Length: 250
Image (cartoon, rainbow, N blue to C red; front, top):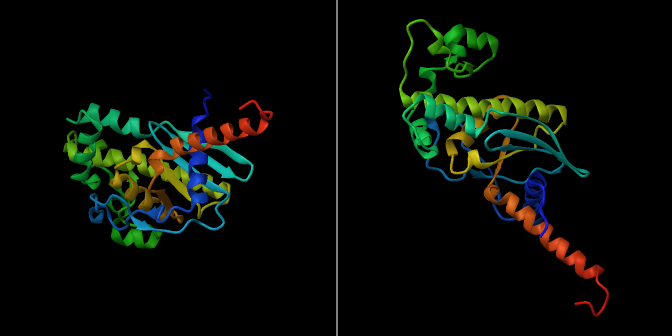
């Protein structure tokens, strides 16, 4: 038995899917305003693998977030944040009636983050947004409206939606900065448990990253990247051992 590093397995799983050229593996999430997001859509629109593929940035969104730059030499963890899926669930449980991840997602799907978040439009007005070149719906301060005196309560649905968007948007800001540094703005992939069966988070990420000038790529089999990479390692290791064995040993 041999253990393989988790992130190495995830990276190798992605590269294996690219090598196998699985049909419609890559997709993009639906865009549009928040109220236009189709939360019942399992996958988005099919897309092509970026060419060339490397270097790329893989953003793994689980309990926390890790950003990995993958190139021909291997991969390097270049950054991350503690604000991830566990933050979403923990805060949802602390601030709302949600007790499980699915309950928190269900509340978020019915919520409106603009009821608790301060938007650019709230500060500058529609005319000011035009002058600044910023979209009116851009979040200026997460939960900013609750900081005002007298605003001490909010619907559970709106709080969960704002929490989800806070996590997703913070991932995008971090991803865009690393992608620019490593010159792979057109090759940013997102994976991880927080995005599993969570089209709302994927669409929020796609919209946020698009506003920052980069496309977001997702994989249909992203839930299995680690398993695929570990399996490929095991098969390669077994094959290598057989090659190294002398005739008559097996």
